[in-house]
Image 1 (cartoon, one colour):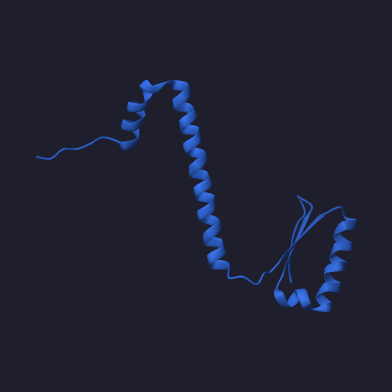
Image 2: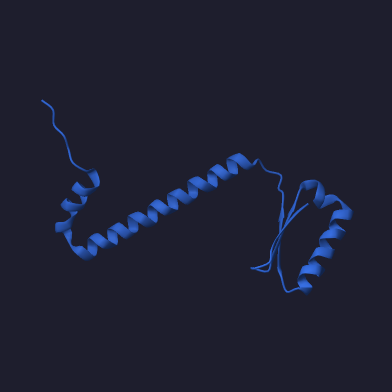
Length: 104
């Protein structure tokens, strides 16, 4: 069990391993912490370790968040183009692609 306390935010964060979740002594300590920090009007957040492999789950979450951010950016650009009119499309495309170079 790991405990992090933020006095300014009145927040107690408790991290439990799989072993902590099945240990009766640790569960009693957790109940005691709830009472202690609850009396101080703190928010108590408990994070419990899971059974899944963290690497693929984290990778999936990061990819999902990046896709969502790209969709939001695309939507904003579409709205800007609709507001500005179609004559700005060429200028936007040139600004995005940057200068071109020819050799020869």
